[in-house]
Amino acid sequence: MEFSWYLFGNAVTSGIMLGGFYAAVAIGITIAFGMLDIVNIAHPAFMVLGSFLAFLGVNALGIDPILATPFLAAAGFFVGRLFYRGYYAAFERRGDESLQGLAFFFGIMFIVEIGLVLIFGVDYRLVDLPYLARTLEFGPIEVPLRLAVPCLFGVGTLLLVQAFMSRTFTGRTIKAVAQDPEAVRLVGADPIHAKEVAFGIAVATAIVAGVMLIILQPVEPSVGREFIGRAFAICVLGGMASLPGTLIAAMILGTAETMTSTFFGPSWAPAVAFGLLLTTLAVRPDGILGR
Figure 1: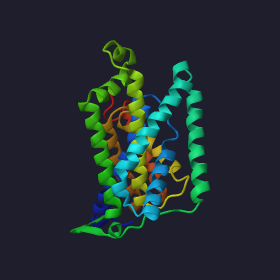
Figure 2: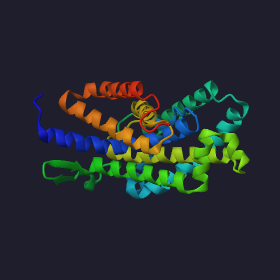
Figure 3: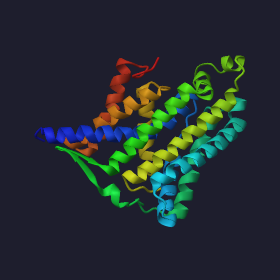
Figure 4: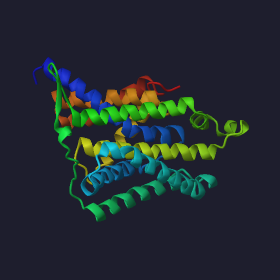
C-alpha cells in the first residue's frame, strides 16, 4: 500500500485510543499477576461478564452503560474480594496456589462463559446508543466516540488505581506485599487483607473494561479469550507490577496493531504486536518500567 500521511495520522490516533482501552483490560492482570503473583486466567471472563451486565442494563432497564459503570465496578470489587477469600482458603494458605490455583481460575472462566451462553445465547450483542455513532473531526484526524469513550475510561481508571496505590496506606501496603509480605507484617499491616482488596480492584477494573468493550464492539460469551494474550503481554512489557508501564505498553501495543492493520492488513496485527513484545524483552527483560 502506498504511504499516506492521512492514513498514518488516523492510524496513530486510533492506536492511542485503542491503547487506552487495552490499558483498562490489562490493569487487573498487572495487579493480580504482576503484584500478587496470581495467574488469573478468568480475567477475560469477568470482563465479558461486565459487557453483558452493561447490555442488560441498557436493554432491560434503559440505563446508560457509562452511568452504570461505577455501580458495576463496585459490585465487581465485592465479588473479587469474595473470590480471593475462597482462593486463599482453598489454595494459597496451604501453598498450593500454583497449578491448583490455575485450575481453579480455569474452572471459573468456563463456568462464567457457560452461564452467559445459557442466559444470552451465542449471538453477538452490541450497545447501540445514538451518541456513540458520532465522529469528531480535527482537521484530517477523525475521532469516533465509540473508540474515544473506552480510551478515556481506560486511562481514567488506570490513573485512579495508580493514585490509590501511591497515596493511601492500603495501596502502599499492596505494593509492599508484592515485594516482601513478611516485611508488611512487621509494620503491623495485614498482607492477606491487602491482597483481598487488590484482587477486588483487579476484578472491578475487569468489569469496567467489559463495559467499555461492548461500547467498542459486539461481544459474545467467549470473546474475552481474544484479549487474555494481549493483557499478559502488556503486563510483561510494561514491567509486571508497574501501572504507568502498563499504560505505556498498552499505547505501544495499540499503535502497533492499528499501524499494521492499516498498512499491511489486520491478519498481521497480532504477530507484529507480539513480535514487538519479544524484541523488547530481548533488549530489556524487566520490561519498560521494570526494576
